[in-house]
Image 1 (cartoon, rainbow, N blue to C red):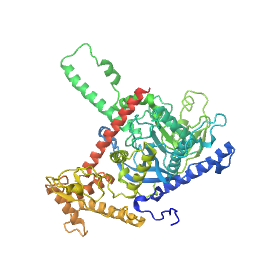
Image 2: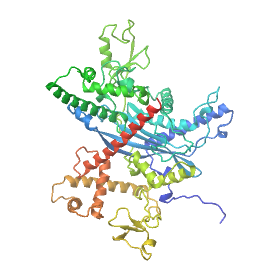
Image 3: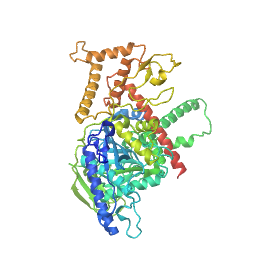
Image 4: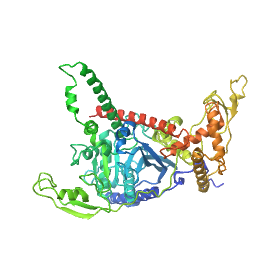
Amino acid sequence: EKGTVKQIVNRPQAMLEAKDLAKTKLSTFLEQRISKFLVNERQVRAQVLGKKPSEVPTAEGLTIRIVNSNDKLFSALPEFFKHYEKDKVAGEMKYRSKILLLFQKVDGVDLCLFCMYVQEYGKDCPAPNTRRTYLSYLDSVRYFKPEGITAFGGDPKTGRGDSLRTLVYQELIMGYLQYLKNRGFTSMYIWACPPLPGDDYIFYVHPQRQKTPKSDRLREWYMRMLKRAKEQKIVVKTSNLWDLFFEGGKEHRVDPCKPLDLPYFEGDYIPGALEDNFTKILAEQEEEKKGAGKKSKKTFKGSSSRGKSKRTAGESVDSQVMTRLGDTIKHMKDDFMMVHLQPICSYCRKYIIAPEKRFSCETCPNFDLCERCYKDDCGLDERSRHPTGSLAVHKFKESVAPVVKDTSDADPTMECEIFETRQTFLSLCQGNHYQFDTFRRAKHSSMMVLYHLHNPAAPAFTSSCNVCSRELEPGQGFRCSVCTDYDVCAVCKNKPGFSHPHELKKQSSQTDSRVSRMSEEERRARQEQLRKTMQLLVHASSCQDKKCPHPSCFKVKMLFQHSLTCQTKATGGCQYCRRMWALLQLHAKSCTTPNCPVPRCRDLKQYRRFAQAQAEKRRRMHYHQMVQNHP
């Protein structure tokens, strides 16, 4: 009556904001760190500009949330596993996948600005990934407010410096590194691989004014961030993969490394490159064997492969793989960053943690030895001791190695289907045109991302009428029971002259979740019910008791039996088969059991791995193309 707009107190499910997403200890830790950073930065900038802190603008309305945190299995690639099976290499490695989102409230709307995908391999993960983390993907869109602000007032002489937006993003990664260090992780691996111009990693269609960074620019961005992390004692030191593991590197000092010693992460460059090299070398060996068999019957004076045979004669497959891989990444070695959160032994490359003792060189910076390597070094003659080739032996200072935790995660698991993988979210945005190329579209796309996060049961893709192309609301219209993806609205169906050869069934009109807000208790109850359903599926798959006391075991067994004998199948519209297929797919996404008894679980996992391998191969090809175009 007075012409004032009342603030919404209890928002419906479709209007929930970023702050309404579930909090975790990690998100709270990062929000507190960013808040302290912004307060300090504002005070310093105000002092440099000669103003009061309240007179200088700063970033406000920031919200950080972890939207997906679940356990996954990464299987070693076939040739790699076959070659090292005798060494009892782990065929599968369990890790926790996490997705972090940063929102900022601009003009009353939460904008999704920053996204980061990480993989955490805990203390129970077998070598070489024990206590390691992999920053797999990172993306942002340039709508951070305020714009044009130089953090801390810039350099006193030139006034130049990093933007506030850049330092907030870097502070976010530094906070995550600190959180990892507090939990007992020893290192993080980063592959600085920018997308090709026009391609997208996570967000679909970036603003035109936002340039795609080149490899050197992206690498410089990471190095500035890591330099600040070292100044704050978060990072012990940084290096790169080539210097640490390949012969000729600055930190490669003792025994040659095997491919088995390299960090082995899902989606990274190294696993695919190792697989390609193993495949090529083994194929060359087979060709040489066939050629040797033919030449034994009839010999020739000359041989075009004599130089090659001499070069590889007596050289093991491991050595050939490391040599070829080293030659490939040598010229782009700075793109493969190793971030050490704990002291690392300069000889054996193992991290020095309690109860071991740490021996630090008093002359050489960042030169540490573990207790075993220090004893071995003391047993050598003076010329062979550190530093090698010098008559002056450096002294070492003994100290207690840092005590680390067991890397256990205090936050619960969280599953979000639309953020299951980078490609899943990108496909959702592409299919629904959730673009970020303009400010207006970015607001709409962010709003829809929040809608899907708050309403996981809502359909990810909207259906449209095949006759008039009008968008259909959930529960409205009719769907063909035979044709795939054929929908028609009620208006077109009731028009005279409309005909379709198959039966059209009215779509189920479920209660729209946008009308009422789902409470936290209801959300937890739903997750618990889903967990029990997955447990029942595993139980029924291995249960041999015909008189099983479990009330629903017999029903699930009957669904299994039906799916074997059904002639209609899920593609034909059988509701029972569709229900069973949906349960199997949901189970396979989160299954971490190596020999799972659930039917089709192994096939579904292999299909997902094949699709992932193809995406990794394309990424490696794009990376090589980029390096060749910009040497």
